[in-house]
Image (cartoon, rainbow, N blue to C red; front, side, top):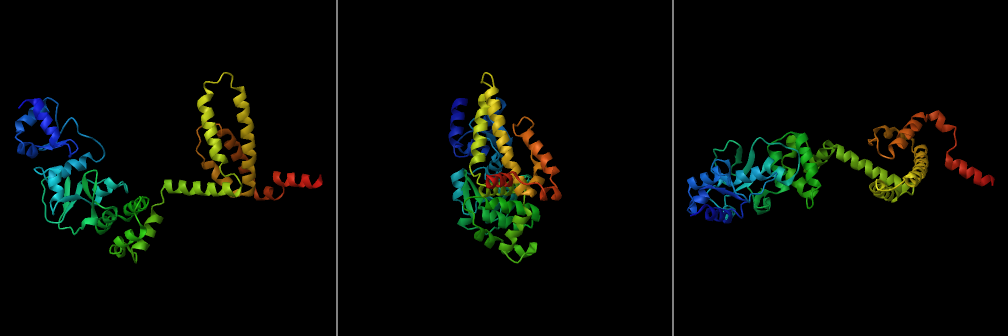
Length: 337
């Protein structure tokens, strides 16, 4: 068989296996180990681990290593044969968390489970044997059999991983579509006492409190700002302004003579600053948050924010008690007229 014909046959065999082929699979179709070695020497195939090759059509990504490990555990079986086997090996624990994109674990080994007993000589693979898993516990993700999010978290909790890692995993899981707190709490009921909590619900609440990340705090700040904008009648203004300024910024480089744009921008900025100063006077605590604003120096609002920062710093409880706000002055002037 010519090399071209051999490669065509290999590609058809690995079509449902992400472009991965094993020497055992190739042998079952009459392709020898020597033929694979020659194709590898020519750079047509890429050997990634013992008895396993990538074809030219192979797809690469964050799950490639896990896929290779799964194929290597049953090298003579094709995907359909593996998935139909009652005691098939499925991805679980840390590797399942990676596939579901929950948590930030970096496992030293690829983790799998089986309902029976399975041994391996691959040093980078860990197998949990005699696992009790029903059909709802295992699902297919891009062709890989993987424990569900709920089962994955329950398995990790059973292994007593550090609470702070588990907290991030639980919090990430609750952001996933279809994951219900009640179902997850039920899965954690058995492990909750080990971590010092009465039940799964209390466990989840503790995880959420522990996993307050920077992103969580930013989300809270965004919600606060949105609520404040509604209170002040500014809803929609900030979004509209941001979109407008972004569009203007993109066009500014092509405008001849930017005086009109600069004048319009200066006028708009002053109006915004006036409104923000009113906010500071009405909500003095907000001024304390201003130094944390992280704007690039080139941002049109950076100068205004720095000026407002100085203004806010100059406001003391004593000073706040004596000056009249601009809104008060305007109201007083209207009454006098």
